[in-house]
Image (cartoon, rainbow, N blue to C red; front, side, top):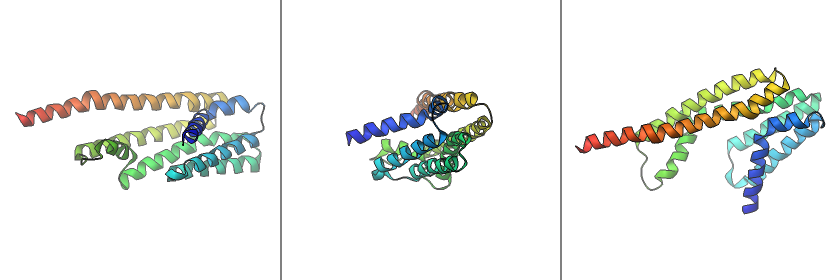
Length: 196
């Protein structure tokens, strides 16, 4: 339904802005309330996406719920910083599992272009390689994000609310450009050589 899509879009934006929201609201709002809002948003997203149940959605909800419980139990805003690194670990697990239990996420997205034809083996191999690159990124991001937990709130916010997304976007754009300007030309050249 349209209103569900709009609400899901709003929730996604809120979760992406989580580090900035924590930084701006923490001086004025009790950490318990922030953690409860995080868990409530996760629950709302599960309800909205009930037609598309996935382990990642339930994983995100479990992380939010666990953080809410820990923050409430210890009344310590420090634990609010765990959300980005735990989400990164979740993404690392999801992408890594795809390498051992195919198809991986990249392959599933690629298969949308091969609905009526068989996906070539070289495309499947390429999706595996891209998945490995993303796994390395999530590993790196998780290490740095963990380091920021023990740094100042400003550093934590700057990395997890800006630099991390900048790196992610750069990797996404780089892969897109590589695929369209290098891989496609290489395949066209191989195809033309076979036809000669």
